[in-house]
Amino acid sequence: MIDNLNQSQSSDNYKNQAIAKNIKSLPYPKAILFDLDGTLADTAFDLTSAINIMRAKRNLEAMSSEYLRKFASQGAVGLLWAGFGITNDKPEFKSYQLEFLDIYRHNICESTVLFNGIAEVLNQLEQHKIPWGIVTNKSTKLTLPLIEELKQKYNIPSPHAVVCGDTTAYPKPHPEPMLFACEQMGIHSDLNVWYVGDDVRDTKAAKAANMTSIAAAYGYLGDNENINSWNADYIISNISEILDIFEYDK
Image (tube, rainbow, N blue to C red; front, side, top):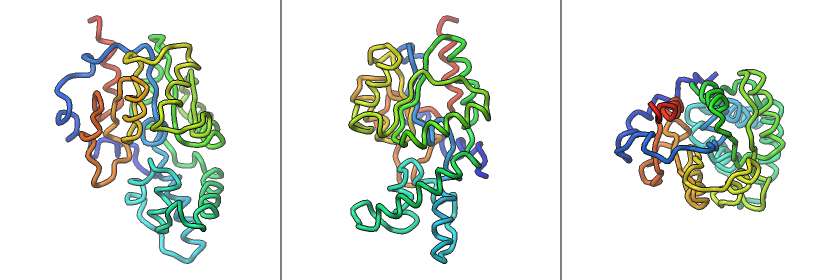
C-alpha cells in the first residue's frame, strides 16, 4: 500500500518558488472544488495494480508502482502508455482500456486512501458552511462508487457537487465541468470559487472558468513536471494549508 505520507516527498520545494504570498491573500472562498485522483484521494496503488494485473496475464514483469503513479493523473491513457507503450490512436487501445477499467472497477478502493489532512479540511469546510465539490475527468461509474467507499471509510461529508468526465459535453481543461459544478451548488463562478488540482489541466480549467486556481504539489507530478509553469494562483504542498483560511478574521 502506498504510504499516504508520500504527498510531502517532493512538494516542499515548490511552495515558495512560484508565488510570494500566503493563502490568506487569495479571495476568501465561497466554495472550494477539488480534483479527485491525486488531490483528494491517493488512488495510485489501485490504478497501478490494474496495470500489473494486465501485465501478469501477458507474462510480463510487474512494473514499479512508484514509476507508474507518475502517470496516474492521466488516467487510462497515461497508465496504458506507461505500462504497454500503447497510445490512444492505436487500434488495440480500446480493448486495453476496457480491460484496464474493468479490473480497476472491481478493485476500486482496495488500497486507496485520502491524502493526509483531507478529512479534516472537508469537515472544517462543512462546519464553516463553505460548500465543496469534486470535478474529475474520471467516469461517473467509477467516481460515485469510489466517493461512497471513501465516505464510509473516513466518515467524511457528502460533496455538494460531483461532476465527472462524462457529466458534461467536454472534460477538463474545458470550463464546462467547472461551471456545471457551480450550477449544482447554486453559485456563480468567480475568483471566490477555488479549484484545487494536481495537473496542469486543472489550472487551465480553473482559469477558463474565472476561478482561483490552486495547484497541489503533493499530487501525481511527473519527473519533468514544472508546477511553477502552470501559473496557478497558489501552490500548496499540503492540503491542510487550506485550514489557514479560517484565520482570516483573527
